[in-house]
Length: 396
Ligand code: GLA
Image (cartoon, helix red, strand yellow):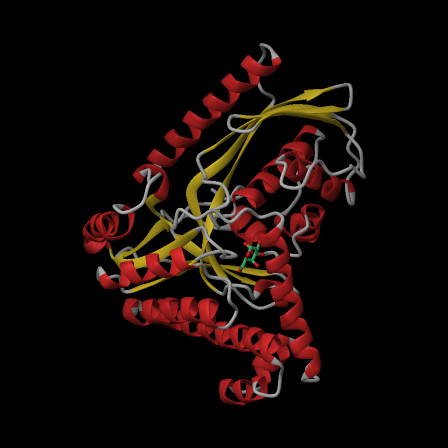
């Protein structure tokens, strides 16, 4: 934990320095630090209202900020340059994929509930790889939301934030669920977070100290804009239309009332795309339940088996994997990992790889040889790191 606070201090200083160098001298009024996340299990099911199990990372989006009295917002990112716009409840989006859209999404989401009158200068420093399935964009959205609210004197609860944030991402074109926002706000150190929706229910699930999750980038990025957004939204639409064609009212009710065998048989009545989506959603929901039981028993082998099964379903049923992710997962398994799968929306980005703590360095070394040695652009520090179960932005 001492290491965590040292890291935070390092980024607070870097963000404060960037604020001064870009916008002139003076101390920041505030600092927010929002982690990325991996999702352990429960992929592409949060938007159907089903429980998921993410875990916050030690890598974070950090913002130092200070108030402005002229209603302007200026923001500088260490990587993407400066943007400026006026405080307003209904902003015009910038070009698709532009990072300022996440700031505007935050402003619009906040304005649905709180009245913003004070603008800000903000400096953003992050060590979270972008477009990697680690929720860097949601972390930015959440961090800027918190900065705007704090500047204007509001201290929202997690529940209040969860009422506005998931829909807020529609501004950037994603019709996502609430997993990322809940995880980056409310995870507890040393734990994963079981998230149930409608009503929101969050419970911290300790990760056994002997388990290690390695985060490995496939080196294929998955920009959460344009084509990936359209593919992502199409999975949601197919899942909903499959449910409707079967005359079922919700996935939750279906899973509570029917066996996996019955639901698998139902999938056979649907056209191809809906059938695959339905099958992924119901099997993944059962895998979440099994993973929770495996965690309680500290059964790492069963947990790993379920991770790998999840990857197969994302690859073969939902079709959201990528050949490089499949190769990465296979390399990890060949190197002796107990389970591996893509994490986040897919289409590129990262895989998570499970092993016993004592095997993790060997596994990391083997992966560097088996997967990365043949590829260019590999940066070991950025693309291959161990996940430390960390605290969300509103938790210690
Ligand atoms: C993205 C979305 C989440 C979730 C995952 C897939 O990260 O933001 O809401 O749907 O994809 O599980």
